[in-house]
Length: 370
Ligand code: ATP
Image 1: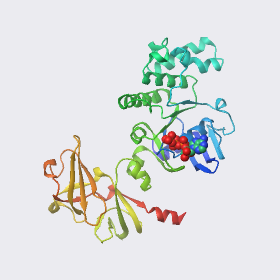
Image 2: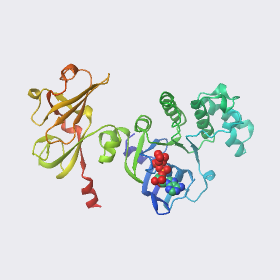
Image 3: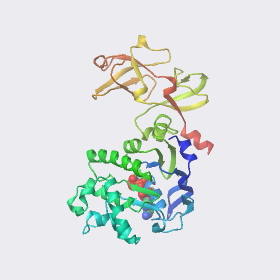
Image 4: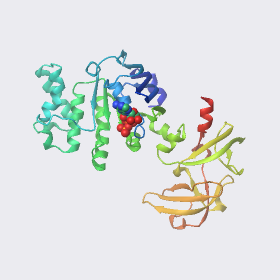
């Protein structure tokens, strides 16, 4: 789903000008956000950027300092959590230790006074969704961490909320289990069709699970988009740096089409109609490494400083004249030079397709514009 298409659907959640201050500290600067029905939307960013604050505002655990929050068409920012059609799954499973799995899952239905004739079927359905149909009579202590978290998901889904909020739900699990539950959660999301809003600081997790995501930085949304939009078209150096690996070059644009210039006047490939100083970003996998005789005109000559064989790829760090940090290139399978030829001190040329280079406005220029 593209960012544009998603915005055209009815919104499950809308945040308008939402701000949160804690005393003198601004945790969230005014935020505009629209999450469509049925999305798996990730809030991604480094520690302290405001992800949990955003989730807690939607869930009603804290009140905004300013702004409006809507769930579907209802304004909810003055409503307590239990009056909002949301449920939350936390990192700590927060299951009742003395209750069986079935009773934990059914707890919300009991509170809502749903008759047992109806709730029994809904509990079984929720347990089925998370693959725990045969675990109903166990106590939480008789389950693994991953199973406990699946109970927490079932407990949150059994009330059929419009929105499921998940705050780093896999954070306490080891990497292998985490990967498995990532797949399971995306399957559960597809099965129930509920809108999921998922907080994580793990970019791989966000990339692999979300339909769209927001990258937050210091209380601001830097960019909203699908994983591939964010990866291939980052709109700032922060996003490019935070998601995946990037090479950055300081360039001057506007002198010739298809080429931008380094400080010493050498041209490197980039399609841009902008003029002025900018940072060019190119991903390691977009960089071709070739013998200098084989390279096109707008390529960069350099010397290999390090070669790392990583199985599925070989990573090469190349020091280029006039470029402050070595550039990193990833070579997969059969490339122009065989891995054994990529030895340190060897002279090579680096180049890339103009469409694979992304021009990022200088942050100082952005500040001047603001
Ligand atoms: P993490 O990944 O570490 O959980 P986060 O992105 O979820 O981080 P938040 O918990 O939303 O970050 O916090 C955003 C900012 O607000 C941080 O600077 C944090 O210190 C501050 N903050 C959060 N809760 C409070 C509070 N109750 N009182 C004061 N400051 C707070």
